[in-house]
Image 1 (cartoon, rainbow, N blue to C red):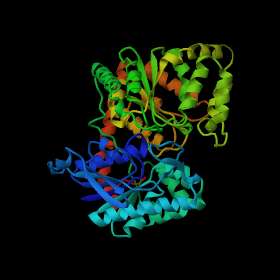
Image 2: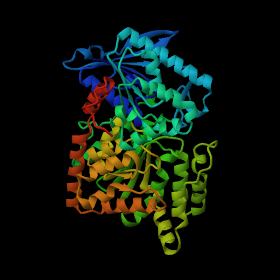
Image 3: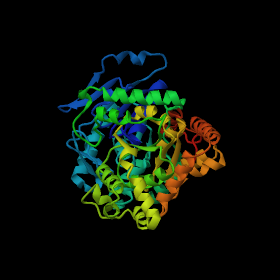
Image 4: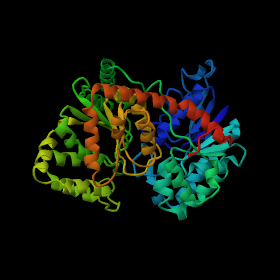
Length: 529
């Protein structure tokens, strides 16, 4: 089957980028022909991509990648072509960030004329590709603008599904309904099925759109886990895999480094950071995700001295990129030197640390924790915090597949987001590797935690989530300490339950089948949220 996918962003990093890369890979593996439109400037880095299409002087040119052209002839294997529409110098995004070779500006900061140009350019590109190839099913990502782009470009000739990722809904449509609800409704109107990662996202979508007919077409369609890639390893093998990853990155050619952007990484620096880790000596805990305020990394940073008080061998590995990295490093530095007043000032600044134009919404849960430190408890905290410099390691961005060499070496992973999330994909990937995922107890994150909790011993289930309130820092730390100090038998039984649940509930092949079914309106076989 020929499947057209409109994503509009990248094929690496986190969230919807990873979703679309892995979905395309799964569809190719199932024998389908995939035509994916996005803004990734290096699609050849994805091993499943066979050809690249770009518009040069207004004309589409498709270039087969050397050494991959014959892959479509492999038994049972499909083919993927990635196209990059010429949208000009501006890319509308949901969260302020920096991209390679293009200006990224939030939808709310774009003028009506700029949004109209973005829509027109993408509609024209999709229409041209669809006219040449005649796809039999299509998928639009995000509530805006992917669905309306497909609706206008396909004009009802191709059935399509819509995958709702939380960012467009929560950061763009809900804050400015008068601007974005009309195009959101237009895009969803013609969709055969609407896929959401969780019940929470479904309810949020229904309330925002106000369409009583919408629940009838909404089905669960969470991201998947590559259960062949993300697997548990014995301790020695996990340590060896981590060392090999560090060496591989450290010895990377300088040519891999590209123009500066929030997505750019220094492979050699990342490798050197990973080589500082020793899972046979340290108890590793990872954070993987964007470094932005809404991901709650401030709570994890503040919790780490509390963890070190009880578990001196604990080491935090921060994997990610984003505008708040400088603020996070500043917070850790302030805590490390016992300057709680500076830490408090950073908490008061809130999002203004990553975006000077943003309103000063204080990080109130962090403030509550800092203001609650007094007496002997304050002194113990400050003493433990002096070790933050050596017990917290930043790697910068890692490619998604590289996480499969890090997560098996970790005891746990923390997803401390303070903002609603459609699904806890990285939590599920950590669970597949046998690392306990500790997530904030809300939205799609909680639904993942609850599914995992049903498969593990009761004594471990409580360590899968923590409430986001004024006690969040202490709750997070207490649950991590409980897990890191748990008896070997409990840890082994818990890991067995985590791994089995992920393999049973979430796989990319199942996701791929669900997308095609949703596009054709075959919803009976898909779970309701």
